[in-house]
Image 1 (cartoon, rainbow, N blue to C red):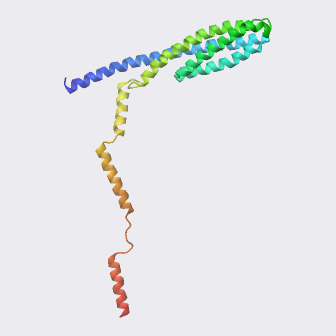
Image 2 (cartoon, helix red, strand yellow):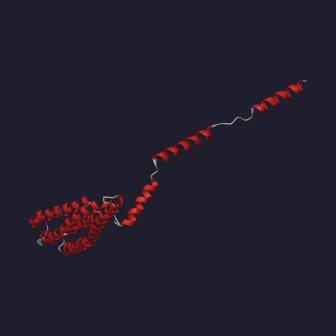
Image 3 (cartoon, rainbow, N blue to C red):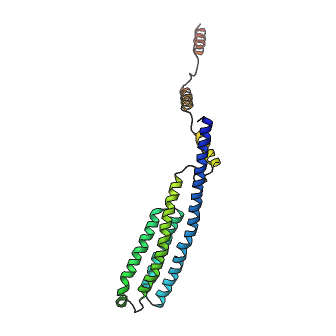
Length: 220
């Protein structure tokens, strides 16, 4: 295979790789835009419903639970989805699971602690639906984040365009000096610094001779 054919083959392979990665990147962005709805909608419904049910039943503990959990869940979902932060998504699932277990644990004791509204039982059912929707979205989000992180390591990210990639490579190559040229520049700089350190005498030897002759003539 000649050099021209090899270059053409490499360019063809790179074009196919860029096209594949660009398709994956667009798919990640498309799925991510849909996940926003599955995060916002359940949280936006659960919070006011929990507050309303807590107020009419005089069980403020349920409303406080929603006021604490929903903002935390919303922040973790935003960070995991928009910042591609995997740990935030795992923390989101963990927070919802722990809160679900807490509601299920308190539900049997509600008649002894609060009024006979079984409010924690109702909260537990609503929260279970919230956990199912948001938890599923978080798992899908984790999957697309893994794909996104792989694309970050690929050449041409995020445009995956040959023209942009070639421009970036040219900029990087122009920014790297040849070692021989770098050595010459260093020597020139060193020589220039050495010359600047040389101190010229205030007067020349001829000046001293002239002064000596003038002094002798004055003595005569």
